[in-house]
Image 1: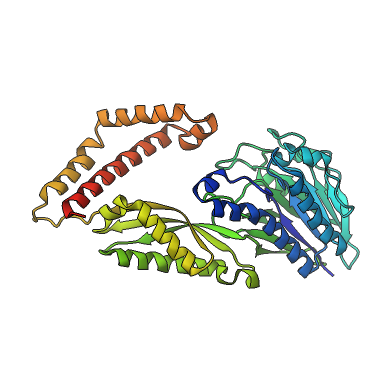
Image 2: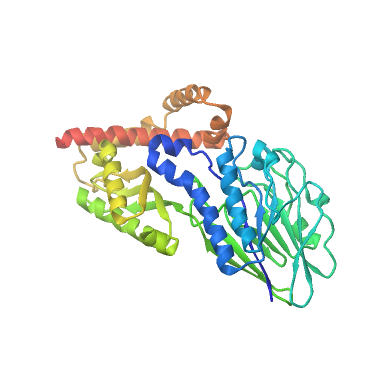
Length: 430
C-alpha cells in the first residue's frame, strides 16, 4: 500500500476582506465564508481518498484578529479527520505566530504541531516496511529573517522524508522575506518532498526531489486569481512520488479581457462581455456548485479595443457596471468585482476631415500629457494623495521611481480619454 497525504497551506481562515465588503457586502460575505468552505472541502477529499495524513504548511489563521469561533470551527474539522484515523501535521506560519488562539488552542490527539526544534515524527510506513517521517519547524515570531533550513535534522536513513517549511524562498513580489532559502539548498538537504507554504501562487519548483508550493486553497482578492486547490501526494512502495492538484476554492478570481474592436452599439458590447463571462464561468464549474464542488466566478473585466462606444462607456461607467453585474448574475454563480476601461475611439482615416475633437485628442495625447509642466503637476497631486495614506499603502501603490512614472503616465492617459469621452458624448447630443 502507498502512503498518501494532502498538502495545503495559507488557508487564512476568516480573513477580513475590507475592500470587497466596502464595494459589495454580499460578495465580501461570500469570500470570507469561502475560507471555511475550502477547509471543509479539503477534509472531504481527505475522507473520500482515505489518505494517511493532511499536512498544513502554515498560516491556518490570519493574524491577531482570529476569533474563538474560528478556532472552534477548525477543531470540528480536525475531529472529522480524527474519527477517520487521519493524522494532521501542522507548522505555524508568520500569521499564526501573531494569533493568541494559536498559543491557547489544544488540538485533538491526531494533530501534531511542530515546534521550532525540527524534530522528525514517524507518520507511518509503506507496505514494504519503509517508514515515512515528517519534519517541520514552526514560526515562533511573526518574522523570520534568516533561513530555518539549518534547524532541520538530517533525513532519517532508509525512510521517506517529508519536510514542512513556511518560506518566501529566494523572494517573491508582494512578500517580505520569510525564512529565505534557495531551491538548490532545499534539494541538497536530502528530503524526498518539501511541503512549502507562504506564497499564494501554486508552483512545482522541482520534481526530484519534489519541492511544491501549493498556493492558498482560496483566493481572497483579484491579486490571488486563478484556480486554487490542494496537492494530493502518493508515495509508492518503490519511493516514487506522484502529485495531483485538486480544486477546492469556492470563489475563483479572474481578470478577463473583452475585445470591443469594431463593436458600435451597446447591445453588441453586452453580448461580447456575456460570451467571455460564460466561458470563464464554465471553466470554474460554477453552474452546479453543490453537485460538482464548483466555484463562484469573481471577475474583473477589462473592456479594450477601438470602438465608437468609447466615450459612452466612460461617461456611463456606473450603468455599465450595473448591467454587467446583472449579466454575470443571470449566468449563475457569477460576480463582477470591477470594470476597467482600456477602450479608445476609432482612428480617423487619413485624408478625412478630422474635426475639432480629433484635433483636440491629438494635442492632448501628443503634447499636453507629455509635457514636463503637466507631468510635474500630476506628480505633486499624487504626492499629496500618498501623504494621506498609510506607509504600507504608499509602498503598494508606488514601490519605486519606475512605478511612479508608470502611474503618472497612466493617470495622464486615462484623464485625457475621460475628458474626450465626455466631450464626444456632448457633441453627439447623448
